[in-house]
Length: 341
Image (cartoon, rainbow, N blue to C red; front, side, top):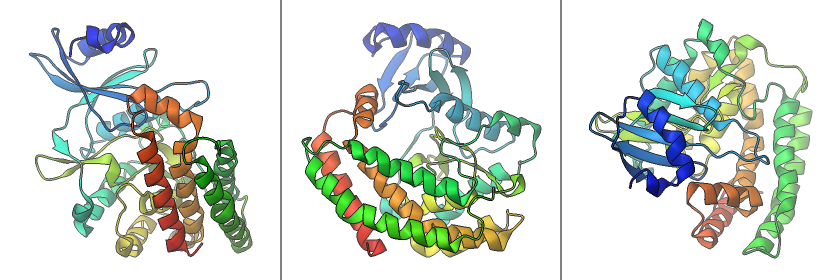
């Protein structure tokens, strides 16, 4: 694939960034499938091979994916963490960034072992060992940062409100609406009431010393098994300062390649040791787990919203909508069954 094959907009924007990354023309591009939000390419030349990301941007989706992804990667690399691709260069005006190309593959479910969970924990711990480094000021709050119990509940409430935008006349739309209104929303009402009752200070913010540098959307779905047999973690588009209890809940609730629930207790204990109030952290993580189980049910149904269609189209993954929607409905039903909802 040549620069011309990419389209004049990306071709023109990519050239300065590639030069800054040490990639000298002529180039060879290979589109990498699998991304749901961005366009991703392997770019080869006689001098280097890099990964090029063109980030989705739209007025209806205000997330600054590039700044979060590149900024978190830059901070982690600069403080000596190596379990991620090296960030090479960014162009915020063009909405693009270049990273080291890591030869590797995605894990399969059977490979998500206790050892891999330990690797993920080590990555999180290594990043957070450098809280207090002057460079941390360059890391913003996470995309959906929550520093109070009220914040956590509000975040999920907003996701439920977005689901009112599901068109019942769209493919599988009736099934999605029935699932939301018949099972998810009643479960949410029960969970929200229980969490509000179980929190003595729902609007008391988490102190700075008990916050974490969160990779966000953290899990084995966003990792590669590299040629050296170790994992490289990637895709930090929502990363930043956040509540570590939220990180833990997300890590065990994300459905694409879930961490074994049998490792949760030891994982929580290890993260608690990074907190200045470990007992309070453990209690907060337990209190919030059902909140995030329902949050991820909402996220899985984003497939039925117009914004998801725009991201898929941008990323070149618009085909197979019916299959994706059916798969998401099945995952949500399985998650609700596990909750007893």
